[in-house]
Amino acid sequence: MGTLQWVILAVVVMAGLGYWNYQRIDGQRKALEGAGFVVSDDLKGNPGLLVSTTQQQIAVLIPTGYLRVGFDQLKHGEIRQDASGEKDSNYRIALILNGASQSEVENRYQDEHQADSAFKKLRNLTSH
Image (cartoon, rainbow, N blue to C red; front, top):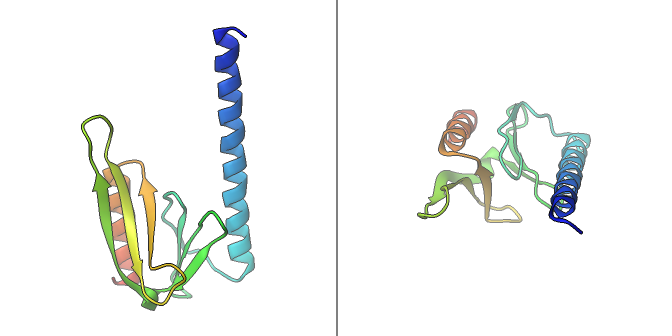
């Protein structure tokens, strides 16, 4: 195979994986909503971070489905970052949870602005 064929194959595989991941996350969100979660705010991120102000709950779309916790289970949240000279910083919102199946969940964001905006909105919605 020539170089162009390898590049085309790589692009096709990446597009296929991207579509599969989108379908998987969409399925998780539909399952969450089917279980009665009412999304009032989508704070994006990876994995997805959803808020229901009417139910006073947060949901994180994790690889195995979703994690759903009440505002009262959120001990606190913080923005974290890893910076190295060779790559961009890795901005994340860390949710420290109490009484949930996981004690901590991180949601990644593309850049500092997106992480900061999502974190401020989360704090306003949850009063944490």
